Image (cartoon, rainbow, N blue to C red; front, side, top):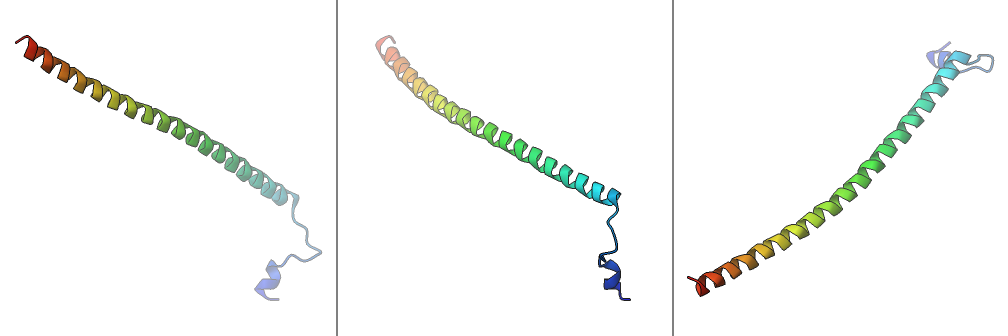
Length: 84
């Protein structure tokens, strides 16, 4: 009898119920874990897209504030020329 014969499941051999139950339980656990990992990833992706939109709005506001500072500086310069 060779080693391969020992590992082959013969028709008269049965898989123990405990081994089958353990295999099914582990498979269910892996499926559950993969599902929860996918949900965490989708939450992170939604958060990232929301954060990206906020970053873009902040960038626009920064540019508007910079333009207002420039305008204020020009106004102050003109006022300084009129009222020395």
